[in-house]
Image (tube, rainbow, N blue to C red; front, side):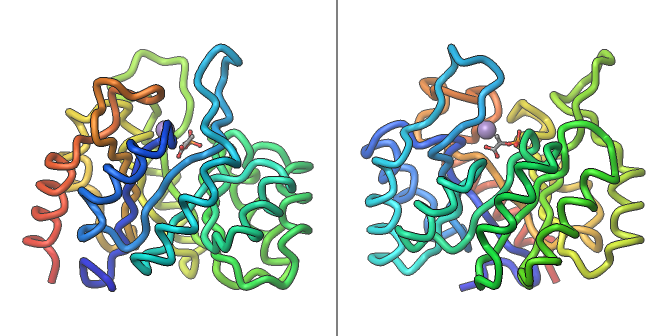
Length: 249
Ligand code: PEP
Ligand code: MN
């Protein structure tokens, strides 16, 4: 069921932390999302950081999909992840910004999905190299994947900045000009790195350019094991969605 006309709404925790956190978060937002997100393998910059609940969370994800008939999307970074995702009926997967920069990884993942009817969402690469971004899309095109979307989450920058990642709206527009047929999902959580900016970013984004939104939502953000500052509380999330509904045609 589409919650907002012409816009795909994706929401859920940065990472699955345990069964209760996963089910509680899902229960509190499932009426407001088209797709629930739940990272189980986290490609963290430091190995000291929480790296996800892993494969043991897949039966819960399958259970949620079956019981509620709402698709769940997860991130994949290796062909082993792809194999496991398919085994547990996960049909929407995304490539993280740190994977899109690596042509070897992208090619291997693309090959492992050859001619499947999977939905693949490719996050823009962590650095602002348009060639890596479009190259990754092309690799999935070439193996016969038809359902390709991209997720815009801004770019890493060393400059002093307001947001966690630099928006580079110019590159987003450029992408849209050349790849008008690829839907763009906007991820204000990873772009901003802080919930205080998310409402404004969503209100101000050019709605003609984006086909949907991906939000990080956690049932108890202050206790989150990853991306604590950018995960919305379910009530904050619903307020943002309600504002989007007011503005939709
Ligand atoms: C994520 O969506 O969980 C994530 C790690 O984001 P990104 O790849 O954009 O940093
Ligand atoms: Mn995250």
